[in-house]
Length: 326
Image 1 (cartoon, rainbow, N blue to C red):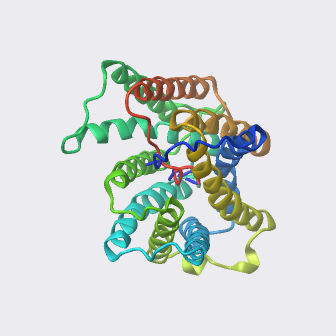
Image 2 (cartoon, helix red, strand yellow; image 1 turned 60 degrees about the horizontal axis):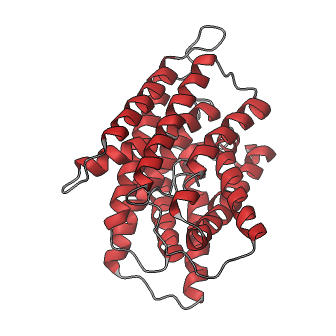
């Protein structure tokens, strides 16, 4: 999602034998932590004067065309037709259903709360991976994590602000849940999809396909008449370029590079940090309310994600998707 965030399965890239400078590794981690955590704020600001689906579709299409063009210019082979078909399916699930759902829902749900709900995506991934044909049954400890996570999401849905009003609009909450399920389904499918060997080319294809489906959805939802460039605020325009350049391109590049020089388990720690960054920025910049119930719910969700990730990392490395937080 951005965020939908939503990301974004993480390609399991072999760890490089050459050790890069420590400062460069730390800078890449910082980029993934802070940039992806800030995309929720960026989405909130961008959609204040831009239609959500057309905004999201435009930034992903621009980023995807840039990545695809750069990789093709570097001599990467042209993808096959069947790879484009699977890229379209992945892009629709991750970027239309996932990030598009998050962008639309943030019209009704605070950015920090959105990030906490999206943080529960690994819970859905575990369930979908289990229910698919020949799926893996989770360890008993994982079920404890699932229970904690779903309790946290339920608590957020029931939370009220200091004035007694619902903190999360019921429709917005429902769309966010569907968005996280779409992310999870797309992430699980992407592990088995037909993709090019080059990770950046594959991501570019999925961004192009996802951006196209987002733009088409925006047209179907009647967003075109709402596009008035003269009414776009400077803040929304700045947020749009930030999401396109930093959220999609810089964040992706840092993420994919980290997968080559570090371990998937370490890189996956972004899932713990992004919600804290989003909540902090939402509070500082937008003055979003943070009732005790939301803080408790966030602790339950993040505790569940950590419990599940740690357990999964003892076996098969955890797999999430970078586009979820783009």
